[in-house]
Amino acid sequence: MEISFSGSPRPTLGVEWELAIVNRGDRDLVNAAEAVLDELAERHGIDPTQAESPIHKEFLRNTVEIVTGVHNTVGEAMDDVARSLRAVLAAGDRLGVDFFCAGTHPFAHWTDEMLTDKPNYVEIINRNQYWGRQLLIWGVHVHVGVSRADKVFPILNALLMKYPHLLALSGSSPIWDGKDTGYASTRALLFQQLPTAGLPFQFETWQEFEQFTGDQMKTGIIESLGGLHWDIRPSPGFGTIEVRVCDGIPTMRELAALTALIHCIVVDLDRRLEAGEELPSMPPWLVQENKWRAARYGLDAEVILDRDCNEQVVTDDLAVMLEKLEPVAKSLDCARELGSVADIPRYGASYQRQRSIVEGGGSLASIVDSLVGELRGSVM
Image (cartoon, rainbow, N blue to C red; front, side, top):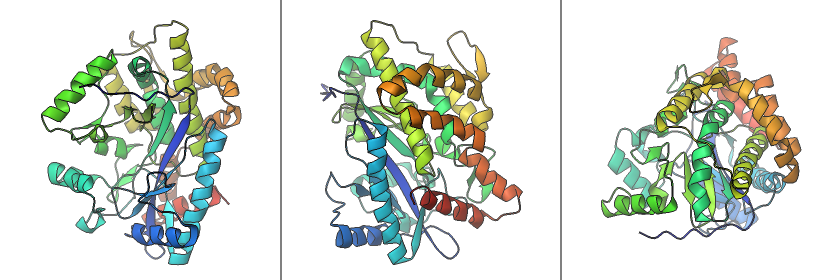
């Protein structure tokens, strides 16, 4: 099966940010996406049925997704996000609902009424049954443009070595179904239960990916490339690598920081590849262990750095990585946003902030209150 990769002449950037909708009473989820989108259509002329719409429906009827256009810098992308977020918040105020972003809601329960009525979403539930119904989760996807198909898997395989850093920084799902799971990211482990989700295969060439995809489609495992729900995947139509590692990110500042980090890592790897360097990678069993450690321990995780199984606490390795990426960030005009990455361990990742509320005597609803306030405060 031949798959055409559009290719991006520049390392462009796009962001998808999923927001959950909650009521203002008990802070449970509310299936108000349709009402929010209708309000946006009436007040702002936004048509969510159009591909270029900045605000979309999602898998769940309690979710809307902000989608940026194609941008050259993190700052441009965040300006785009902020415009949409202000419109969404204003629509919520008119309807009497609020929004938050995190990997999970701390106490909501799945019901059949939550599912958006789209054939591909219905098929996820029909095929996966109980495991599909657990997907009460939210995340962030970042697209970075890559010029040629032959670059995709060398970059993707090397990018997997930074997977635990991204997951530890964005971990925001410690509590699920009313229980503290002991994990920084419960979402990461919930999502990988789908047979087409989780870590990507580490192909050496684009042709191997084409063979794999042909097998998947011939056997009915997927019907389109969109059926591959990998944590990092090629997006051939956009000419990008799509990084889907991160839990839902609660604030604009953190979103900008992690978007900058992803942009810088991918562009750095791309430039090194262009310069003739053979990019590093790790065996899948080490990548898998790193994912679990980051999901379990977050910023306290001791991660595996290389094929020789050298290890370091993720925050210590992060400091080294940020210093190395400073020149790349300057060239991409995102040095300020990249610098904000270091603030996350300093002030606490979302999973730590959520736990501190409970440790201080707060309720699970208080966690939602805090997440709602963080989101609104980050754009005001």
